[in-house]
Image (cartoon, rainbow, N blue to C red; front, top):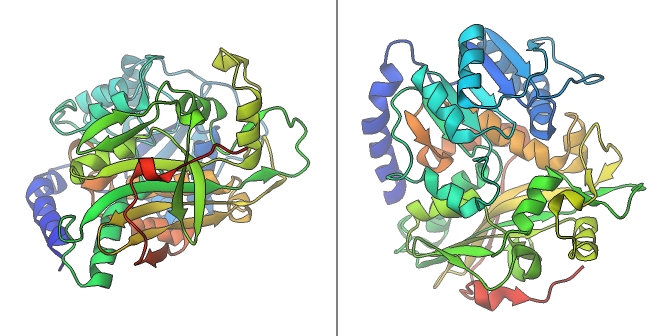
Length: 434
């Protein structure tokens, strides 16, 4: 067994056995569950996966009841037979969520909305209820993604005894966190070295994504189109400074994410994307403290063009936007490819990740991007209860986690270029293109 995997398994046995066997506690979906934000992009994708995949059906059948709650009334949207829609209600605080949890006898909260993450976790912890979300959210408008992500680090995160709280279990963050750990083992196997960052000369780790999704016959070419939340995407792109993590520290670069372009491998191709802030680059630095970590994101072409046209708009609310997922848009084409690039000093670079076609997403009533996120949410749901308190995906068994993901997205791809030079971010800078 590779050194890293052996160390991980020892850690898991000693830290989770008491939690796993505690009376009334079980790993995976059970009891009554509450899905917040069920009518949004992730909520609809997750319901599609629960209804139409073997892995999802196994989760749905393990629950006593699944309650659906959204902030706004919803009509004309298909609801699976196993789910119960609650009257529309905006969850405004942890105390508000606690009242709902007690009234409905909830054992697990699956949050696909934009509620206050840590407030909700504290409320769930006091009641011994578990919680899962796709990303950390805060009511502070000026809070940057990297500053929020630091709240998830061991030693910084609140120490909570009640419940199991998995934060950031989607695609990125989420699936890519597990891919980083598995990628280290894959590279070690290929070059005959221990699965250890120092033994492999690990130099950099980059999440890379190419999204080519396009709407056929787009009605409003002036809008900023996005395959997930357009407003949330813009908020990331328009943060004051692009960042990377070096030697465990967040380093700001001299431009906003939307003002820089960087070249990196994504599957078989090189992409030219923006360096955007995400939780996983901060939390992965806890596992890989001596290297550079960043996220290079090549947006859909129409989104890049809209970004250039509206760059002078002072207020985010003034941007026209378009959601590229059903029911807002159904005439879609393209794919989303996401993975992790491991860059070494001696053994080139290795990429592993997933490519999902839009047509596959549409079969589940969603698009490629949201299907990937839903796969990560379901994988995390299956592992909920494996660890006590607040934790991230890289603290779970990556192989067990990815087993659920691959049952939905298919096997991940691996591309190894043994001759690639060990370029860091400054050497990858290229001209911004539209």
